[in-house]
Image 1 (cartoon, rainbow, N blue to C red):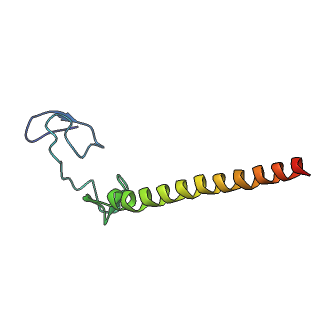
Image 2: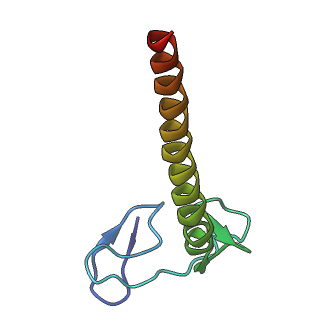
Image 3: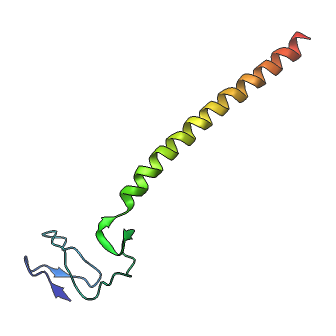
Amino acid sequence: MDNCKYCGQELQANWIVCPHCRTRIFDERYKPNDTLYLTHDGDPDKNIGGILLIVGVPLFLFSLIMLISNLYWMSYHFLNMVIEVYMT
């Protein structure tokens, strides 16, 4: 076990940020190919989660609008069909 260089908090082996003082711990144990976070080039500071959020939210909203629109038109045609059957 290691201790934080700044506050002296005891650190577990898999921590890369001190939970007490929020200091990032750089260590040779964490190599760029470690998959700790969804990152670009293994650097936690260049998190691609923001890019996924920027792309994912508009796609989700677009698909939600399309779903509501399709449900509206399907119900409209279904009601027209029911009215047509009752009118004849």
